[in-house]
View 1: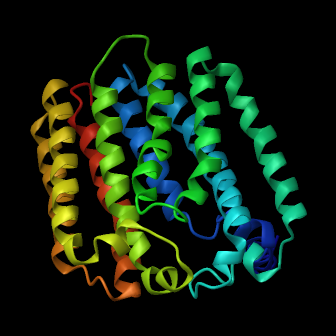
View 2: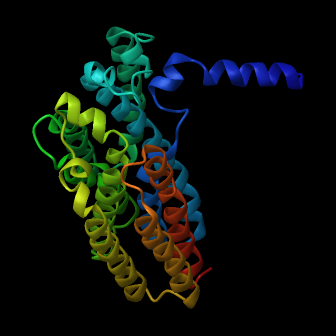
Amino acid sequence: MSRCHQSLSLQTITQNKYYKLMRLDNLTGYLLLVLPILWVIVILANTVLEMVIFIPLFAICGLIARSAGCIINDMVDAEFDKQVSRTKNRPLASGAVTKLEATYALMFLALLGMIPLFVLSYASIVLCLIAGVMTVIYPFLKRYTSYAQVFLGFVFNLGVIVAYLTVSTKASFNPLLIYIASVLWTIAYDTIYSLQDKDDDTKIGLKSMGIKYEEKIHSILYQLYSSFIVLILLVGVSTNMSTLFYVLLGCAAFGLYSTVDTLQVSDPEDCRKKFKHHVYYGCAILLAFMFGKTYL
């Protein structure tokens, strides 16, 4: 195939309405979902071979789960999305995709998501079902409470526990520490994310931590990030990580604190950039766990 044809095919895919419906044109959310899962896999894996097996498995599962979650969110929020400048061009809000088409896409993803269940434990399957129910509940919360970000933190990171139950049969506090840390991390970056739409959300009556705590946002973020770093540090200490772990964790911590220091609450573009930067910090922590392990 010629370079021209390859470019045309790629352009056709990226412009496809289902591609955009599943948010495959913006993988920031997917990466933020899967990174904590990779952290716990790296911690629990006894060999490089185990990482080679489990990392692709959960990377694919995470992509399916995130895509399905985006469709559910957009189906519930379509009428609100039309009134928000950042989201008005989403496929469902703009009418490019009908709710029936979105339902078919969701059913397809649900079928795909059932395939990995055959390699999961019973407890993991139950947890996946609970996560599915919580994913449906989540979009409704911002109509009634300012703490949808807290709820998202708990549901968005359930993959950490699923990975733990799949990779290891040994009792350990480290996966729980990573789960709690990831919840705090998610609350922080999703609060920054919510700041992008605070003016439009206020007009249409939606709630968020970004709106409720706009004046105290920097202080709250400092507390969330500090607690997050302490928990990750505890995991490193309990697993006898090498010096390189602490160096890389320090780099991530510096980035997170710099995010708070320079965050411009009333600038949607700055909030968008600061939200996306969390991928870099998450990758730094992943590298910290990978290169901090003694067998590497």
